[in-house]
Length: 130
Image (cartoon, rainbow, N blue to C red; front, side, top):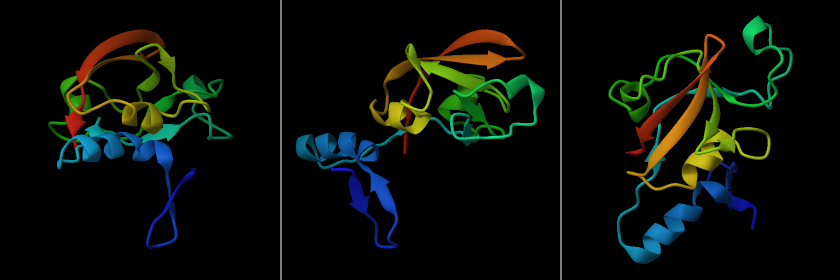
């Protein structure tokens, strides 16, 4: 199965609801893990002008400030941080950020490796509920 076609004819990939199926089978409540950021997938961006990201073809570039009181804000993730790993899983064309996050459950603790000002930084974060 690739996904489910939504009522507006858009495709919802299977990785976005695999964990939800397990939740429905084990309880009546559905929770989705939540970071609280917008991002650009650098594996899909061509012609990056910003010099510090020009040579990257992997990672998730945080676009704008994290949502107030979100797990990302609490973990001090900032606009223009480049998320390169989640628990040692490299964020790239094979593992996009949404797919990796959806493989966890709300309340799980993850380690995020990011680049900020050309320096690698690791932060721990507890995924929220959406």
